[in-house]
Length: 631
Image (cartoon, rainbow, N blue to C red; front, top):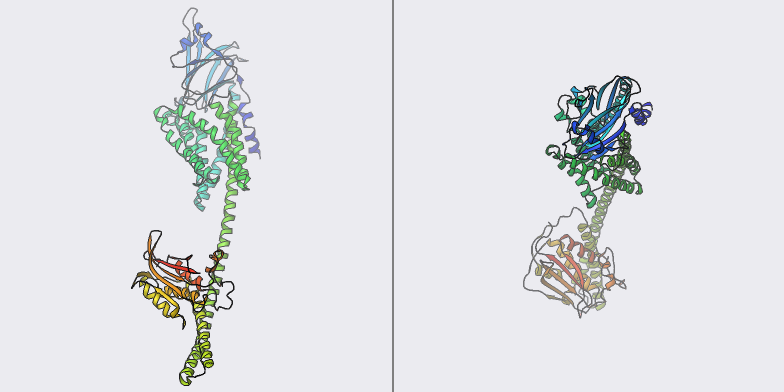
């Protein structure tokens, strides 16, 4: 709790103490041609513009000269601090005593990222100059500032002891900041290594890039990592500015649920990922100032869009949406004013530099809560999916077992039925042969018995065929066949007395492909349906022809009758299981004939359809392709 209180009070601690300088004025040196002699000359005084606020010119290549007055309340040693730490070239000019009439002389102190940190007068992350002020009279100083980063300067006068105490507190608070950021990074890195979920990996990379960015922002790359090599320390800030923006893109795209199906948003995140990487080259071409200005402008656009996506998630009831919305609000509060300051659109002050780190930390912690909520929801969804999969598998196993039992029952039943039916049919045939009754009524009874046996046998065959075509293990094995021969065989399979009614219209032969047994079942059922549902003496048309459908060559078998026909409203229904025609209760059947025809057509990659043809009632066409039949 104490650490949190310190972090929340960080700006007050950082800004407490120290004395502001007076009479701050600015001279803009667009081409960098000014020297201390030219700006300190009496005639140059009118070119300085008084500043109501401290210097904040944004990203610009212009060199800035600051003139200010220091009037200590007591003589002695004083330290002049100039923030922020990421300035490239700072030159402080202090007027030296000279004889009357002599040319002015100045003492120059240099600092900034372009100078080795080891040469600093005071070992502090920003520029600090030691001033020996023997009296309390006002003294004028000139500060030359040139940087590729945002041009801003916040000078302040300190007593050495007070400065050291404030710096110690500041370093402790910054250590807490980096400690928390490192903890978040390590926790997510461990989760990524352990769970192999890319969300943790993306987030840990994003946090790492931000941590390294703030090491550069706070001047620690020069102070602790590369104190003797400014050529390495200087581009640190720019490099990790680009890297942090790019590293955040895949993480936020994932947690905000932006997939490839959301083309516009996906492209937006892709630009955020790629553009900073492309702009990294500006660090070596001398165009960092312009590249940073582009990225800062993009940030002003990115934050509102993130807020909208987070709000959309929250509106959908996603638990992590609320945390992301809070994180986006925190970022907007801390980042938008800072970005406006860095672009020179808002005066700003030193407080913004510190507040950005506080809000960044609060943002990271809020996003961490969002990650936790997201992963919990994902785990819950995964467990629910696994439970549904297990339930579906159990149901599938139960259905499979039920189907096996059903098939076994049907096989047993058909076996038990076929034996007595064969005995009855054989007995009737024997009676007819042995006795040869002259009585017409006796012969009629014999024929009725045999027709009844035939109908029961037909039903048994249909049930067996239905179980076969519905079996998931069924494999269709198409082979070259003769479509006309199959049609003749189907006609010969018709019940006694019906063969003469079938009018077969077919060429001598017609090649086709299919599973012979299954195709035969389909053709027999088509004929049987037409014969049963049409008047006893009416003809049934049966045509075999080559036919192309949707650019595929094939063979069609068309059966037509002159019965009651099929109502157009029932065309889709008649191919279902156990569907019987209306007003046909007197016709025997299980309602499986047309279902078998359609199922067999589908298994072969073909089709069956109902047609309208003048002179006929019900016309059904069964079509199979010559090629591409599934095997």
